[in-house]
Length: 329
Image 1 (cartoon, rainbow, N blue to C red):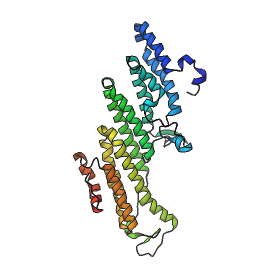
Image 2: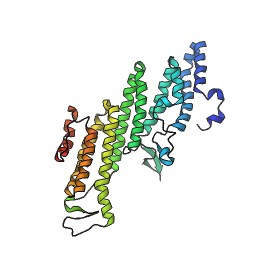
Image 3: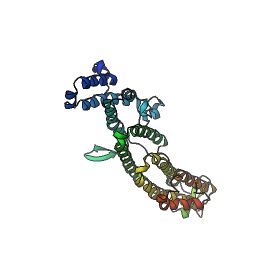
Image 4: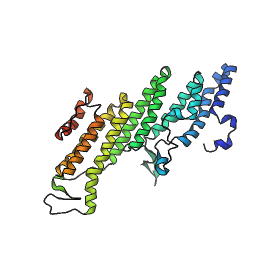
């Protein structure tokens, strides 16, 4: 792709020029145009130019900005791309409309879906799963960026109802399935807290046994803090990302994802950690536990009154009520 500016004739470095050539071909030789799979050729030629601009301006996971602080690459809306604007200008023709939709599916949607997938790599003759270049569902910034991009994609596709009604539904279903798979893998990699909270309490800035006979060393203190506090905060952010940002976009196909969030993340992980924090009698711990449940409650507020989720959300309601938090919108 990087060789294009220097190795491709200027007449073919513009999507507008390419469309003009093919439209003229279609006008002058319609039969020849149909039998030669011309539109397929235009899609492939235009896609190369699209990938060039994507490399220059679309940092899907905001990795470049996290390194050097440069926000020039952060294009959230597909309408901001020059290739989209060029094709949209001529969108009155069936040719350019079809090309635009194929490019969105092949280059934009496909690239977005790849960001949810673990890549197979070969190391020492064995296949391993790599996390490199994969969306981090615990990241609020990446979540907002991806959701904004997906909204713009679906927004355009929904305007082409006669051509893309199935395309929108298929895209939402693919994203929902890939997202659930990624979240399940990430949760599987997390440490499971195995602390007997009934024997531990917090004293000033350290953890000690209930009878204060043993004061834990720094390494053990860090391990306890990670298992109970760091993981709990990360899980709460994950729940917020899934329910507050992703769910409104993919709700039509998000049943399995929401069930996993309520049962495996909230009920089996966050609530037990919060209960452990309460057991370690300390005003600071209680306030932290209350804050964490409050964050989860806020993220799930749009679902709590829906009949299909009342059963799955029951443990969260109970945990909230025991802390004096209202679960009513």
